[in-house]
Every structure is written in structure tokens, then in C-alpha cells.
Amino acid sequence: MNDYRKSLDRLSLEFDGEMIGPEDPRFDGARGVWNAMIDRHPALIAQCRHAGDVQAAVKLAAARDLPIAIRGGGHNVAGHGVCDGGVVIDLSLMRAVTVDASAQVAKVQGGALWRDVDAATQKHGLATPGGLISDTGVAGLTLSGGIGWLRAQHGLAIDNLLGADVVTADGRLIHTSADENPELLWALQGGGGNFGVVVQFEFALHPIGPEVMFAAPIYLVEDGPEPIRAWRNFLAKHGDRVASLCEFSTAGGEDFPEEHWGSRVFTLACVYNGDAAEGEALLQPLRELGAMSADFSGRMNYCDVQQLFDTLMPAGDFRCYWKARYLTELTDEMIDLAMANALAAPSDNSLSSLWNFGGATAAVAADATAFGDRSMGWMYSLDSVWTDPGDDAANIAWSRDGWSNYEEFGHHGRAYLNFPGHGEDNAALTRTSFGPNYQRLVEIKTRYDPKNRFRFNQNIAPKA
Ligand SMILES: Cc1cc2nc3c(=O)[nH]c(=O)nc-3n(C[C@H](O)[C@H](O)[C@H](O)COP(=O)(O)OP(=O)(O)OC[C@H]3O[C@@H](n4cnc5c(N)ncnc54)[C@H](O)[C@@H]3O)c2cc1C
Image 1 (cartoon, rainbow, N blue to C red):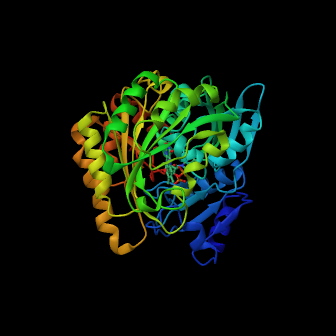
Image 2 (cartoon, rainbow, N blue to C red; image 1 turned 90 degrees about the vertical axis):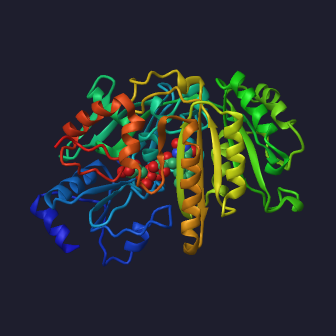
């Protein structure tokens, strides 16, 4: 560690954060990420307190010619927030959120979690689209799209990104917005952590809640696919106001009748963007599609909705492998396949989900953000979650095989890059998923990170 301190001195760089090397007792804790399968040993973990620390860490890595992994919330299932042998720029000490309620803008530091943003913005009756789990990092989720409960009316997280402060590969701190370095803002809207370390995001806020209607009727898989078909048809009419997810899981615990414990179930989870009472009436038919196993529906505070799924995804010793692909439409055949996949999951902790799109998400032009085409109707994700290393092969195979099996229903082979398996398909999927935007991203990458210092992501290789 002294060696790195000496390098900082030689470079006349100041660093106020924590430098954690392999000999430090904090090292094992600091290198762990959300997926317990990821076991990487960086040369150095630089926990930064402010943008100046990030600049120093980037310059230090450049001087040593080391690659950089950027850690936001540490949730990336491929473990892109940590690396072997390089420098981890860890932003977990940078989680401040400041809200300008009159301008309806939030400034969010690069290591913030969604729960930080929701808590700060809801104090003013405002919110910006985030994810479904409150301890996911704002940075990683946003930079590759960001699919959450507000997407029907307010789009993806990137559609609300107004600007950012970024430390680039040469250690400069620059601002990007529609008026300043606009091509960098465009690249951050889906292009991932390829272009630099975002030390602060600026998001547009919208009046939300505090009370919203959340519907979550739960049906048994063995009772058949009719509720899912009816839900699909319902969303065809109301998808511009209702963001929804059909989530397959395994029943258990006191909220379910004991005779259903261990059975596969699906939840037709919906959030209505609008008046809660209006939403309750609109979503009622989804609770009358047959005999429910349980029903978690109710009017509730937006912040509570944002934390409802946390118990399904607790941080801890879970091993994970997640894959997702977009679907053009949700056919009866695809629903049957999703039902069969759910029944075949080797682990009761695994989830699989059908997500709807449409509304404000679909209204954005393909070339308006790096993310690309918005004409996909749906997404299907297979999230393997298990604990025993002896079960690795079976669980990874379930996600991978399930993912391959439904390729024919896919939308031009495009995938959601935030559910990247362990990154083994990144090179091919990145090209396919960005489509015609890929070449423009290569140009921007070459300009901002010609040596590919930031390569632990859905990597866009710079021109040689
Ligand atoms: C439990 C769970 C629930 C999820 N739910 C959703 C959901 O509802 N919707 C959704 O869209 N996705 C969801 N995801 C996927 C999630 O969006 C990705 O895992 C995302 O990468 C997590 O971001 P992070 O900052 O926590 O991850 P990290 O592992 O810290 O980083 C992920 C990537 O982002 C880059 N990065 C991180 N911080 C910065 C920064 N400040 N500047 C530049 N680059 C940075 C890293 O280089 C890395 O490549 C979920 C994931 C998990 C594990």
C-alpha cells in the first residue's frame, strides 16, 4: 500500500478516501460484490470521498498502466464492479442526493443506491424512474437503461438523465448535458460504464404519490396460463399507465396457504402511475382471474413499493446467473414456455419474469439515446439464484438453456445488458443490442477512453 501512497506523492496527487490493498484486513469485505460467485482480487481498492479522489485514482491507475473497475452499488451479476489485478474505484462513500424541488431536478452522487434517491425525492412528493430493488446502485442501473415501476409514464432511468459530472480516462472532470459535451450524455444513456467515472448524475423528477396503487395477485402455475393471457390483453389497453411484471417464484411463508408452500406461483405485479384510487379500480380485474394463492395488492407509499421486492433478493450468500432477452410480442406459446421454465427451475430461490414495455419507454426514438431501439414489446428474464456451489452447473444451465430456448421469440436478438449472465456473451450481445448506434459509441469510446481503461462492463472496444 505504501507503494501506491508513494506513487500518489510522486504524482503530487491528494487522496482523502480509503486505500485498501490485499494486506488490509478490510480487503475481503471491500472486494465482495452482490453475487457471491464473484471472487476477484484487485491490486488496489480506492474508496473515494469526492470527485478529486476519483481523479487521483484514475491518474494513479494510468501511471501504473492498470485497468479500472468502477463500483457503484456492486449489484452487477457479472461482477463488473470488481476486477483481478486492476484498480477498483469504489464510490460507496459517495451517496449524497440533493433535490431542487422547484426545478424538479435531483443531483445524485455516483455511489448512491436507489433507496437514497427515493427517500430524498419523496420528501418533496417527487421521484425519478429507478429499479425494483432499493439497494441496487443508481449508476450501473442507469448507465445501461434502467427498467422500473415508472417506465409507463416516465420511461427508463436514462430518459430522465439530464446531465452528469464525469472523470474521464485522462483524469479530467467534465460536465455533460444537452448543451455541453452532448455526445457524452448520449453515450451515457445506455452505453454503460465505458466512458468514465460518473461522480454525479442529474435526473428530472416527477410528482409521484406519496400513495400509489400496487397490485400483486398471485396465482398457482399448476392452475394454468389463463391469468397471464388476460393480463397481457389488459396491458395491451393500459400499458401507457401501468408498468408490470409477471414474476414466477416459489410460494412459502405465512402469506401463503400452507398447502401451497413449495409450489411454483406467478405474481401479476403492477404499479399504476396516477391517482391511487383510480388505479385500484382499474387494476381490480387482475385480481379476479381465478383462485388466487395470495394477494399483496394495496394502496401504499411509493417508497414502500420501491422496497417490496427487497426480501426476494436479499444480499448475502446467494450465487447468481441472470440472463434477459427482449421479445417482440408475448405469444401464447411464449407464455407456455415461461410456465414450463418456471416449473423446471432447480432452485426455489430462482425467479423468472415477463416485463411489459410501451408508453413513454416506447415513445423514445432509437437514435435519441445510446440504448437504441424501443420497439420491443416485452422482456423475459431468467434469474438463477442458489446457495450451494455444488449446484452451480444446474442453475447456470437453467438460465442459459431457458435463454437459448426462446431465441425465436426474441426481438432482433437484442438483450438487456444489465442482466449479462457472467459476461461471456457481452461482445456479441453488445453489438447486436446497440444496433446502428454501435459505431457511434465506438467513436465516442475512442475519444474518451482510447486505451480502454474502463473495460469491465459491456465493453465497447475503442478503435485500434
Ligand atoms: C437484486 C437486483 C435487482 C435488480 N433489479 C433491477 C431492476 O429492477 N431494473 C433494472 O433495470 N436492473 C435491475 N438490476 C440489474 C442492475 O441494473 C445491474 O446489476 C447494474 O449493473 C447494477 O448497478 P450497480 O451500480 O449496483 O452495479 P456495479 O456492479 O457497481 O456496476 C455495474 C457496472 O456499472 C459501472 N459503473 C458503476 N458505477 C459507475 C459510475 N459511477 N460511473 C461509471 N460506471 C459505473 C461499472 O463499471 C460496471 O460495469 C438488478 C440487479 C440486482 C442484483
